[in-house]
Image (cartoon, rainbow, N blue to C red; front, side, top):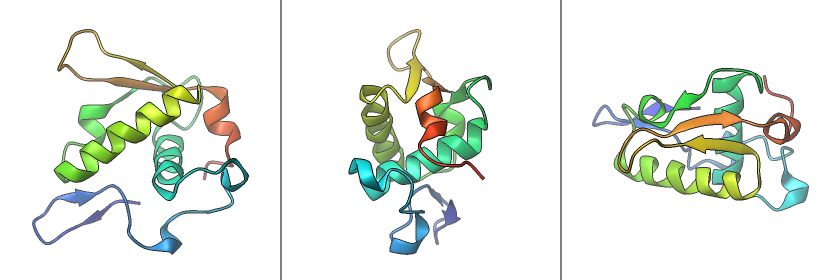
Length: 109
């Protein structure tokens, strides 16, 4: 999913149409970025019972634009009740947990 750019920063989102399995959630009208985020979280969390993922860890080597994009997509998934998020203090790390609907959005591989 992620690739390195010339500056050594990791890209979380691909520009290619082939980067996302469009069968995941395509009937629900999700954007390609939302579908990429679903796949990223499915691959990272594996199961609903997995420990939460850290936004800081997920974006540690990412480009700033990808960090912003991922944050927005987390808001989208939260409003669709696909993930839980927890942030103990403003400007601190965000912990992301998957809900059953995240894993029902397509087979994680």
